[in-house]
Each structure stands twice: as structure tokens, then as C-alpha cells.
Image (cartoon, rainbow, N blue to C red; front, side, top):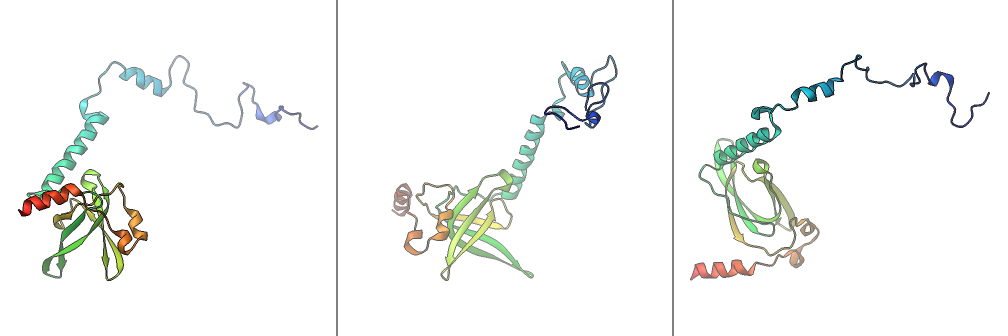
Length: 186
């Protein structure tokens, strides 16, 4: 016999009206509540200890990150720089048993502020080929950062410079920075 629209096969319903094939959580015993509500009722009115609250855990992580940043810097200062600025990044390079400082000069095309995991990307043109390098801001391998010129840009990420070359890849210099440099020379 064909089934009518909306009717269900005989095996679909059990005696109590529930679907026999459906998987359900076991019903709580008569007179008791589910585990979830029982725990909520037990903890209602109680103040959770500060050491277990989400906020204090996040504060602890932030404190540890800040201490690690201070430890890594240890007397070094990182100048304020932004995308568009031309910087010289002095990097400690270890070759065998020799240690030397290598300067990498280029334009900052991106900056990522994530506490201890902060980083920035510097792009330069080396023998006609564009080269990008990512630096961790608080890396112990960075000996120092020097800002050579401030760029006047309207973007946070300058990835469009990858498609440009020559004069179209130039960045205007900030006028306020020009005045500061002229005043310091006098």
C-alpha cells in the first residue's frame, strides 16, 4: 500500500510516540534535574574564586607576555614606525662561530601588532628583484631598528607595492618629518 503524504512508516514511531531511531540523551530520573541544571543551581549565588575566572586567566597571560617583552628588550628601544616608513633593521647573524650584524633596509609594507607575537614585513628592491622579509618585533636576533624616513600613506597594508616597480612604487615623505629633520640639522 502506498504511503500518503505526511504519513510515516510503522517502524518510525514507537509506543510512547517518540522516534525509535532517534538518539537522545537519557532522561533524568524522576524528581531529579539534568546534570547541567543541577551544576548551575549548585553554583548560583557562589562567587567563583578569582584564580579560576576567565578574566584573571587572561590578565595573567597578558602579564606574562609583558614581562617577556621587557626581558627581551632589556635596554633596547624600538622606535615608533608605521607602514610606509623606510627602516634599517640590524639583524644579528651567526655564521659558524662568527657573529656579525647585517643591515636590511627597506619599506615597511605591513605591521602586525599582537603583543609578543608582533611582526612587520620590510620590502626592498635587490638587483631589480623585489625581496620581502618578515621580522618578529621582539626577536632577540634584532640588534636595532632605525627609521630613515617617514612615509605618507593611507593604507595599513601596502601589498599593492608588490605589483609596482620603479617610480610608481615610490612613497611620498611626510612633511612634518621633513621639518623635524631640517630643524635637527641646524
